[in-house]
Image (cartoon, rainbow, N blue to C red):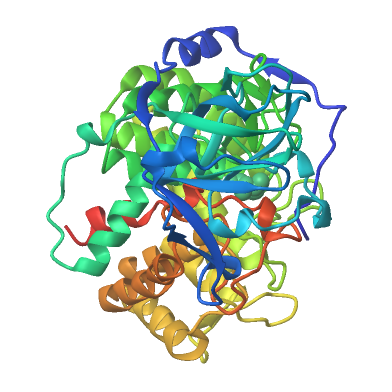
Length: 526
Ligand code: RAM
């Protein structure tokens, strides 16, 4: 069961205006910071760097930018010194004879060096090429200040003159980037992390989170620039341990709670412009996470009002999901409501899906207790059935591993989610993860920091802290070695150029679900 575009245009949506008004009340004012480039960059081939290119500081001096005039086919790359999200402007003048033709300019905004030399025309992946951060501009009269109207997510900005005329050249000065986020690094408590590698991983994690915190928790400020519930769950956890911006988390919870299908399904993502709109995309595990995000929020804040407002949506969603559990306690997944788990399609996700159901239901039951729900006992009964099915039909005692019922397949995701769902006792969980480390590490076939996060957390839950720390260092540390300023959407160590979209140029290199070391370090190691 793979995840591709879903078109479900026959869905009937409920818009709960009371809940949506609360979402809007919690919209943050963005904090703006003016950033100027720190250097002119040369992008050079380097096989050890992400997608084969790195940036080195040029001999050209950024303070003399206006002297490096550009004519036909000449270009220059500005380096902001770090990754930012915001808007760009630059002053442009003509130098030489009178301006006898328009300036034709291409601007490219890149999160990683490899995006600069990549030819957009070569892209033929399945996501829209409109995501490539590239603009073509004609300017008839100079001098002028070019103020780009769109928001970009980048560290590098290439100014590439397609043409001037033989009589004059373009001169650029005063490049300015106004960065935006709902939070500031100044509100971040500085944790004392002794281990230098972990400290570097922590710092890049919080930078990743900060750049994704806009008027919603975006998944990636380059792409998809929207609120996905799977990403939200992890961002909210990282946020509680770092910036602790509760209004933004509350806003996002109300957005999902306020836009559900008639039967109670929670969409996988929502749009907020031009008006609040749910996407007609549904992922089984993502829908379930509404209840777990609410649980985490209530645990963290004890906010009764939010619980009272959003419990009905969580309950309706859980009830709908439970309709897919058969009388033996087996979760039966369907094509129209697939589980996501990871971008990889190389492994069977059925057992992991069963575990996510148990994980979410256990948290929902704790909310039901707080609400004195009369159906509490029914939820407990079905949870027991789901667990008992997992223990008897999905667990192989001899192998100390969970399997796929139909094929006997053993994969990492099944172990990890069953451990996170705490289906077995502590001792068995430890044995499961020890076996996983012994037999399945180094991991292959997993494509996202999202899934690696869950592997690390399962190791901590199973009491294998050393292995958890090692995996964090191996995985997120390797991204740093390959040049990460912020952590990426997809990374498969055994296939570093992998992209779920057919080309790495469309991938996001500042992606929310990769920010979780900040949470893992603070929760399990502080
Ligand atoms: C992509 C985004 C997003 C993720 C979904 C499933 O579109 O990367 O972060 O949640 O897939």
